[in-house]
Length: 132
View 1 (cartoon, one colour):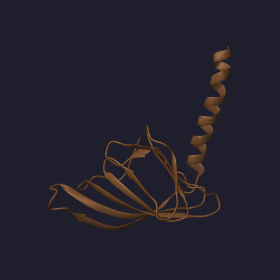
View 2 (cartoon, one colour):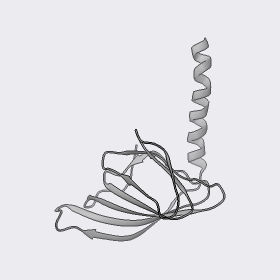
View 3 (tube, rainbow, N blue to C red):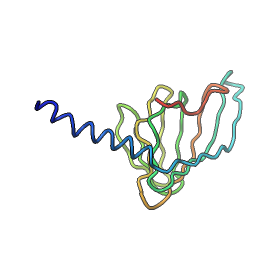
View 4 (spheres, rainbow, N blue to C red):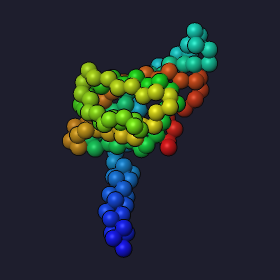
C-alpha cells in the first residue's frame, strides 16, 4: 500500500504536465528557407523561426537532424534527453543532434513571447519534427 501511495503523486504530476502541454498555446513556426546542399548529397538546410506565445510548451519530439538554435527575443527553456535543462536569452545558442530526443522546449515566461531561429541540416524531404 505504501508503494501505491508514493506513486500516486508522481502519476498526478505527470498527468498535470501532460494536460498543461495539451492546453498550452502552440508555437508559431514560419519557414524562411530550404536549400539543397550539393556538397552533402541527399541533405538540405532548412531555416525557420519559432515564436512561443507566453506559456507555450512543445511536446516531446526529435528532429533526426542537426539543429542549431539562436534566441532572438524573450527566454526559452531547452533540454535533450540526458542533458541539462538550460534557460536561454537573446544571443544565446543551443544544439540538438540527429539522435537527440527533445524532452523540454518551452517559453520561460507565462507573460511574454519568445522567438528564435532554427537551422536544420537534414535528409532532403524528411520532416523537421517527429513526435516521440
